[in-house]
Image 1: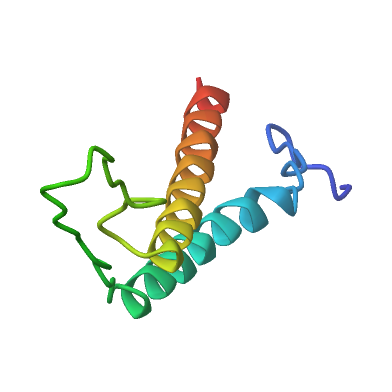
Image 2 (image 1 turned 30 degrees about the vertical axis):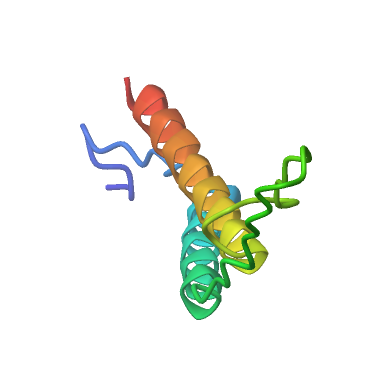
Length: 97
């Protein structure tokens, strides 16, 4: 006689937080941008070397790195993006249990 049927429950679905979509999306964007920056700056100059057999001074290059600073920054951004994705995945798995 009424609209209520026996045994039927209308439970509202919990609203998805915008962070549930935004955080992994930002992490993925950071990984992609970091890899693009690292790939575009992969050309590193090795600089110079010197041979001075008669002097007692030792030569060392400043900031000796086999990759350029742009590549290092790109890889750092990609690693931060991967850390954000790992944190989000762990949080999502922990909430399910």
